[in-house]
Length: 231
Image 1: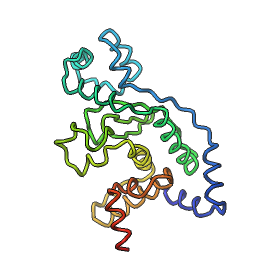
Image 2 (image 1 turned 90 degrees about the horizontal axis):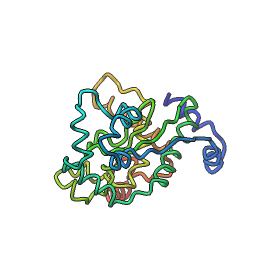
Image 3 (image 1 turned 180 degrees about the vertical axis):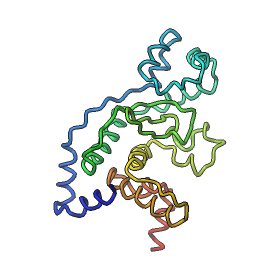
């Protein structure tokens, strides 16, 4: 699949601006669902309705009492996360526009790709859940984008938390979707890993061409500038 995308990118003789214009006209009509807001505004009587709407967000092995505690504000950590997300004042229209732009680029290079609704959740700062594409949904853990200096990240590895910024969302979405098209190798050797991640970053740059290198490669901007000077 990566080879086909590479061939399509190389075979086009059109100027980049013309390609981008063509991509911008690809129809993508998806809904942005702020589940974290719906959950915050719900009470215990709404739980069954939420579970019916978002069954994949409610693991069957967890008892309803856990969700009741969160809804009633008795889960202190979850309540703090809800407050911090609200204080962050995310621009959800802008977020949706960024994700849709990525989806349009994916559709251009992989016409079989089916865009899904976008759903924001609070994952309790689970960095493994930052962006997760499912067949029926694209999940974004909004509590992992509060800004790298947010005090909630104080106890985390700075290598991870330095990328917990709003500006990282688009590149992260492109990276997560790229994984759908790159098969991880069975060989765990270093070279195999380099090739795998190289394919991912190549697709990521195709899906989000307006994103700077330090966001695509997850380098700090100052480190990226230093690398350029060394070259």
